[in-house]
Amino acid sequence: MKTIPGHKSSSIVRHGAVVATAIVCRVQIGTAFVVPQHSLVVPNIYQSHVTGTRSRLNMAFWETKTAEVDVDDTPLNINDLNVNTINDDDDATQDVDLIPAPPAISSMAVVRRDLPLYTGVLALGILPFINYATLLSILDLDPKTLFLCSSIIRTLYFSVLAILTVYLGAQRQDIGMTQAPVGTKNAIVAPIFAGVTLGLLYALIKYTDLDPGTLYRVFASLFGFICFGEILQPVIGLSPLGGSLVEVMEGQNGEEVEVETADDEERLPEGMTTPTIGESQSDTQKFRAASLPAAILALICVALYLITVASPSLTQSLPTLRTVATTNNYLANSIALASLGQIAIESYVAGALLLIGLFAYDALSVFKSDAMLTVATQIEAPVKLLFSGVQLPVEGNYPFAVLGLGDILVPGIFVAMLRQWDVDRYWEANRESLLPSPIVEVEEEKEKPLFDLSALTNFFNTNPEPVVAETPVTSTAVEVIVDDDGPSLDLFADAPTPYFNTGLIGYTVGLAATFLVLFSTGKGQPALFYIVPSLLISSLGTAAYRGEMSELIGFKGARARDAGIAQEAAKEERERAKELAQELEDEEMVAGFAAFNERKAESKRSKEEQE
Image (cartoon, rainbow, N blue to C red; front, side):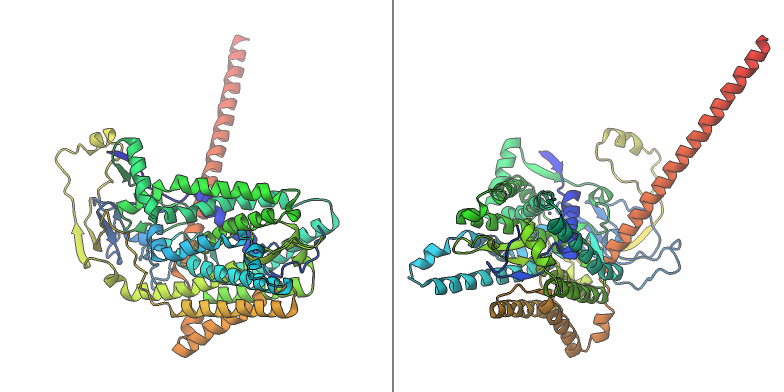
């Protein structure tokens, strides 16, 4: 039997999605609006760990301050689940009544929950590549009717894809990969930062010969490649192809492949606090086996995009335009999906401030200036959804209809925050019943043997057992039983989500209003101008109807909170490491000076003795 390390999402995947989202969501890069085709004059990712068949998961508060527990089958202590504990050494300001964050579940479980929708999103990506002029010519339509039909298809494509992306992206937060918590300060600064950056890009394009688009296109395409691979990997693993890929991998190795578990601290990348629970061996093998095919498909998509978008004949060839739109949309939509799973708003107030600030920024950038339109049509990068027309554009006109990725991401992280409130309350009320085994009190004390050979044993063992606590440990624990050959555990598939549902409805209404005004005026519209009021009204209206207005206003997300705490702790640890390094350097310098002075004094004494 061959052993391979348990899979985990790359740090590049996590930080890539976060950086890409920061560029699109906060800076916008001219994408937070909808543009009708030919209306513009152109001046130019797991963290995951495999538990085998049995996993021990400590769920409730430690009753005593304890050391590590020596438990086989991958022990997870209460800190692994972000359950806040009382520590005598902690600051007096610590809030011991904080709601424990829901545990992370396998990405395979999250994708399996909505596998038909993921498949539908991938299938929708083909629509921009279809030659609708040829298809509709069968109906013998006049040019005006042909253009109207293609416009309807384009609008439906943008709408359905945007809604599905928000729906699926919000649920990806169950994977527990929150890396970019958005607090009140971030929400206030975001529109200012976006406006300054947009102004700088506009000035570079308008008043200089510099081209900021090429570098940005390569940068965004790299993150698109990583995110597209991250989205494809579980989809391929859950498809009928997944089992065949595992057999091929085992055939190449000549033996059965088993995934090796690592220590919790090694599995958790910086900034994350919740390990994955309940992932089956079968799902992990399929996930790993699908990594190479997913990377190859993502690489092909990026290569096609970069080659065709840089083609000199881009605006003279409809097939080239359709290829650019298709590959661009796969990359852009993957960035949106991955980012929505990793960016979490810390509170409802922060989310409302973010929406209101970007609402004003979006409206001013489109209605009072041509900066947004200029930057969006001058910089080609996978940070917007595109759709080409049924005929070549008139010279000087932008060849694509556009839906900015900011119009998906900004509302999407707010809708994800609404779902997170639903999940937090569901987990708080049902965390004991959600787990497949009863809660039991466990008291463990391991007697010290007469002759302790553990050090000698661990010396020859590449996977030594953890150090055993010599003091009694009392905890509330459960056994999570996961069938190796069955599906991974999905704790939140049946969670009621009233705020998430009304948030999706509000987003749909706002997006529909955007397209309605677009068709009425024929001019590019700032989608957030219509989506933001719809989201705020739907969420506050739901809270008022349910009598939960104060609870909603005071909501603070547990996952975002713990991610922020972890980031601050990591930052402090880095600062302490720097200080320690500086102290060591100073000590070495002092010691060096002392040694130098000692040698100098000794040399002087020797010289005096010789004289």
